[in-house]
Length: 277
Image (cartoon, rainbow, N blue to C red; front, side):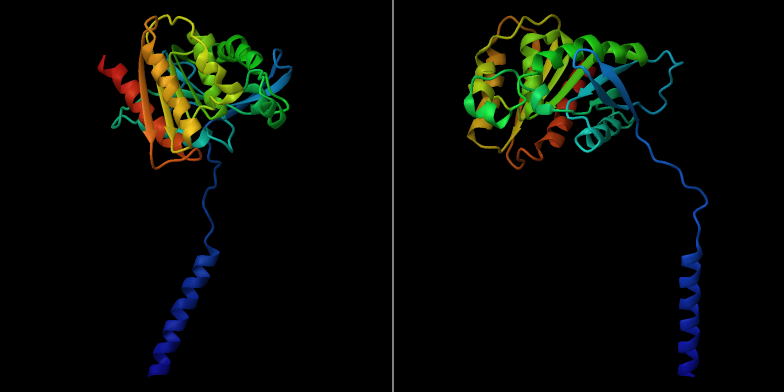
């Protein structure tokens, strides 16, 4: 009797295994969260790739327009996917933390070149031999990238930039020299030590219109932490600008993982403030 029960159980197990092995998916479809576009930049004299996220229901034929979030370090293997996840989540109708937005991830070619201005520091030059191309890269953003996005997508006038580390350095440089390029600046763990902190000694250009500036930094050592705080204090002391300025220190995060939480908090502060108004 025991042998019979064992035989039946073995048969059932064998049939289940056989059935599992012979299951064939009915459909297999590619899973996509956006599109990648490549175009030639005359200013940079090279091809540049953009990763574009479009909100659910986006249609070129619709009258609806969307704000644009420009993401530095926007390659697929960098920050594009997880930042897009925050944008999608935050724009759900039951969340309403952020308006539905287009995300433009700017894929890197040479971030050390593109995100830094010329330095007089000998060590900087040794560590970053291709350094000093930020002026051209800012010109690329202003004269080629933004016009391209505005000509080919349904955009409104609200533009946000997100930059971390060297990207935070570049976002800070844009804020100082070309503040009109963006309405919202999300600057995380900025590498303001560059060129012996020379950018912290500069006075930003006058802002036209209201802006939101979010500065975040993790537990990243005295230099990074103090420089981020100095930037916040400097901007707060300026009387010639109209801006909402936020600062956050993340005691549990480091340079490697502060960005995600910082961007989430920045979205909450910047866009909920706009909604309240």
